[in-house]
Amino acid sequence: MAVLNKSEIAALSDSERLALIDALWESLEAPRGTLPENHFPVLDWQETVLDERLLDLALSPGDEMDLVEARSQSLL
Image 1 (tube, rainbow, N blue to C red):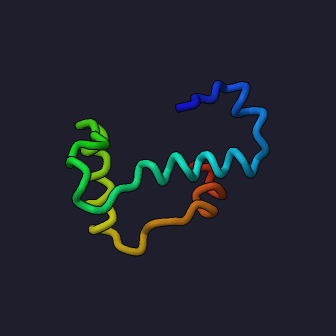
Image 2 (tube, rainbow, N blue to C red; image 1 turned 90 degrees about the vertical axis):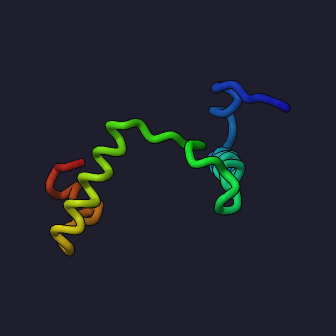
Image 3 (cartoon, rainbow, N blue to C red; image 1 turned 180 degrees about the horizontal axis):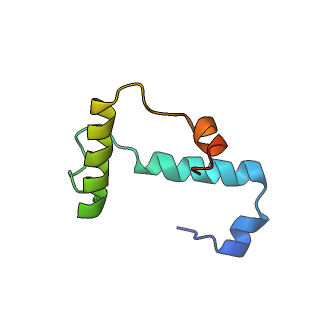
Protein backbone atom coordinates (compact mmCIF):
# COMPACT_ATOMS: atom_id res chain seq x y z
CA MET A 1 0.00 0.00 0.00
CA ALA A 2 1.37 3.38 -0.98
CA VAL A 3 1.15 6.05 1.71
CA LEU A 4 1.19 9.70 0.72
CA ASN A 5 2.95 12.22 2.93
CA LYS A 6 1.67 15.76 3.49
CA SER A 7 3.74 17.32 0.70
CA GLU A 8 2.56 14.69 -1.78
CA ILE A 9 -1.05 15.32 -0.79
CA ALA A 10 -0.53 19.09 -1.08
CA ALA A 11 0.84 18.57 -4.62
CA LEU A 12 -2.43 16.95 -5.72
CA SER A 13 -5.01 19.04 -7.55
CA ASP A 14 -8.19 19.98 -5.72
CA SER A 15 -10.16 17.37 -7.65
CA GLU A 16 -7.56 14.68 -6.84
CA ARG A 17 -7.68 15.55 -3.14
CA LEU A 18 -11.49 15.45 -3.19
CA ALA A 19 -11.33 12.04 -4.88
CA LEU A 20 -8.93 10.87 -2.17
CA ILE A 21 -11.27 12.12 0.55
CA ASP A 22 -14.16 10.35 -1.16
CA ALA A 23 -12.19 7.10 -1.38
CA LEU A 24 -11.25 7.32 2.31
CA TRP A 25 -14.84 8.05 3.33
CA GLU A 26 -16.18 5.14 1.27
CA SER A 27 -13.59 2.85 2.85
CA LEU A 28 -15.23 3.53 6.22
CA GLU A 29 -18.68 2.58 4.98
CA ALA A 30 -19.96 -0.88 5.65
CA PRO A 31 -23.38 -2.48 5.39
CA ARG A 32 -25.55 -1.71 8.41
CA GLY A 33 -24.99 -4.17 11.20
CA THR A 34 -21.58 -5.38 10.05
CA LEU A 35 -19.52 -3.04 12.24
CA PRO A 36 -19.18 -3.58 15.98
CA GLU A 37 -21.14 -1.05 18.04
CA ASN A 38 -17.93 0.54 19.34
CA HIS A 39 -16.25 0.82 15.91
CA PHE A 40 -16.38 4.60 16.26
CA PRO A 41 -16.38 4.99 20.02
CA VAL A 42 -18.15 7.94 21.60
CA LEU A 43 -16.60 9.28 24.77
CA ASP A 44 -18.79 9.67 27.85
CA TRP A 45 -18.72 13.47 27.66
CA GLN A 46 -19.68 13.35 23.97
CA GLU A 47 -22.62 11.09 24.72
CA THR A 48 -23.74 13.48 27.46
CA VAL A 49 -23.63 16.44 25.06
CA LEU A 50 -25.54 14.49 22.40
CA ASP A 51 -28.17 13.41 24.94
CA GLU A 52 -28.59 17.03 26.09
CA ARG A 53 -29.00 18.25 22.52
CA LEU A 54 -31.53 15.54 21.69
CA LEU A 55 -33.52 16.40 24.81
CA ASP A 56 -33.43 20.10 23.96
CA LEU A 57 -34.63 19.33 20.44
CA ALA A 58 -37.45 17.16 21.79
CA LEU A 59 -38.53 19.85 24.28
CA SER A 60 -38.29 22.72 21.79
CA PRO A 61 -39.22 21.44 18.33
CA GLY A 62 -38.74 24.05 15.63
CA ASP A 63 -36.25 25.96 17.76
CA GLU A 64 -33.21 24.82 15.76
CA MET A 65 -31.37 27.06 13.30
CA ASP A 66 -29.45 26.40 10.13
CA LEU A 67 -25.76 27.13 9.55
CA VAL A 68 -26.43 30.47 7.81
CA GLU A 69 -28.50 31.71 10.76
CA ALA A 70 -25.91 30.50 13.29
CA ARG A 71 -23.16 32.33 11.41
CA SER A 72 -25.25 35.49 11.24
CA GLN A 73 -25.56 35.38 15.02
CA SER A 74 -21.80 34.80 15.34
CA LEU A 75 -22.34 31.43 16.97
CA LEU A 76 -19.83 29.87 14.56
